[in-house]
Length: 434
Ligand code: 5AD
Ligand code: SF4
Image (cartoon, rainbow, N blue to C red; front, side):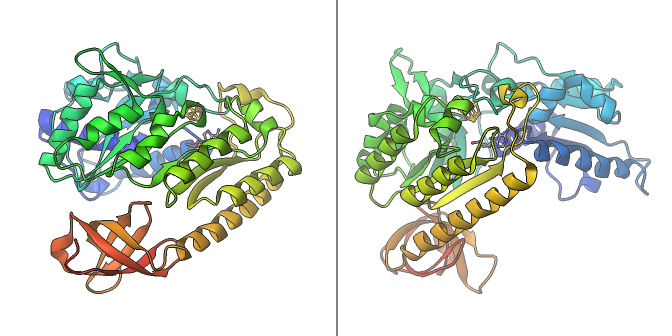
């Protein structure tokens, strides 16, 4: 979502001020950090990056007037407070009001300093953004934003705001614009995308499954993905879509965070491990080749070795093709920040490395299980390594490199998987069978 937002800021500023992207901070007139507030580490990174950027104003280029902005969730969470730590910053804004950027920039150009705008406005930013987003062959489209779930560890409901779904017609129009510019894969985005509930112009309610079906009817859409989903917002129609919509990729990111019911309750996730496994098994039945992915938080307050073992057991049972894992990071303002029974840092770190080892082992085994299969691959470009090699993604979102002519870039190609690497596959293009 941050990558999408950053792209839209660039589209917007090109339209309003003819600003275009440059390669290095030195070349820029305006430098925006689009930030993440999810864990303390991400937050810390912003301030060390700001420290580096400040040096720009002191080097041989010190006569140049750089304009600095901080957007995203750190901007939202800090507001005017940010100027205390970084007084040279000109603009602070949040993820729901970056469409005000041209106006804010005008004010700075008029000599104003230290402007902040973190109100979540009543109007939708999407209505104020240029209608044609820049795009590649695979294009992200936000369909839902914000979150009402308030998991006890998470800042997202505070920074992205409350849950909100875009109207069906707006989404379909954006997708038409993207396919006209060459996109063949559409990635539907939302903090809690399977809670999507939008309306078409006739007032008919659409959940995510119905939206996916509408998207599949747009001319030129050859692939559809969606990310990220919440187990408590699953429904059978979404699972059925994997069998019914040929363009829907065989990939599902369904984070569980922990394999212990006690911890899931403390996180207020709203479901049990058994309920989660029921959804996983239904997914595997409907789409046997599905790649499953999850997020895990290790070291949540009160997590015992037994709770942690339950998480490892769950990973062994589901056999994820891919997973993100994090050490629990207490966030100011969240319910968990006040919880007792803190897991000592070294215990958490040790558990995290055991968990990552298991995830990696299973990922490699799952990659090996792909050898011999013919995969439909979205060819994204020339591979970084290997002469004549192209790089793409399988429907299960695995990276794959293979020897093939460059004219295949931007199309779907059939590729036989011949070799598995820890984080990618090697394949052979099946000629004449695009
Ligand atoms: N500490 C660690 N990880 C977190 N996540 C969200 N909040 C925290 C936190 N306070 C992780 C969750 C979520 C992902 C986007 O980030 O796993 O799914
Ligand atoms: Fe955060 Fe996801 Fe929980 Fe929402 S559902 S509060 S975004 S972890």
